[in-house]
Image (cartoon, rainbow, N blue to C red; front, side):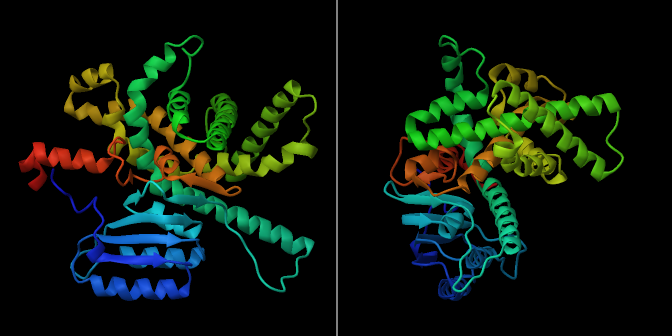
Length: 383
């Protein structure tokens, strides 16, 4: 089989992050990266770290991606998790263009933390710290989602042929695609991770239900609210209506005891979901993955459509699914910022955080597909 260097780590063109991610690690990576930057080939990064500074982790990755003088294109980075990749080191692993782990590798995901000797906390400073942490966690959740969404969609597409069998089971006929996918991967992950995934899906359902209310109000208005503050007020009103309906089903629920704690996160998620950034991301996903997500019947339809109309038809057909997958994965990324989430190599593979487990030839990955295609169509791979 062909060996494509874009998907294979190369220890002779590699930097090693062993130990804490700090200034010393950043300086070492900078020196090694500069030494290897004379040629544009991919760089490999071998990681065995308990984590450290998110600031230095970001600094390290920016240095690894810098282009050379002859090209504006960012250098391709292949990351490899060795024994432990935790916290900021896990972020580095996931950020790779192609991420690999060994079967024994452990990953640890959690949110941003702040600590310091002699830190005095007042009520006002505690509120500021909490807001800062929430903002940072949201930022890192979105970065994780951006870095790993294609892995997640690849995993979803590889499992999709199994969904019809799931729906044939008694009482399962109305399961959504995401619910079927969760059924498939539940066989390969821990009970705790299954709960985390189910909660992520419930998060998206809550947002979708509130969105339906908003769409109804927008339909009644016939236009968008005249100002951003009026749009925000509409979101707040729809959240309150949604929560009141929930309270009718749960007499013990109240805004004071439970609702306020979730109110701000729901508001932020809904406001963000209507932003331009998400729309553009979904459009990119349609271009990259749209044809792969068509059913057999849809593929036949697609083949018979005029070339000039294909792009619009494809977007209309697959955007609802890709939108659901994108916002579900963001919800999952947000959940991974809560508490300490230890993941095995196989769990990280199934939820799309890494591309490949080294030595696991039974698990499909992009490298196998690319290298097989190069063997079958050698001319096309050279052009």
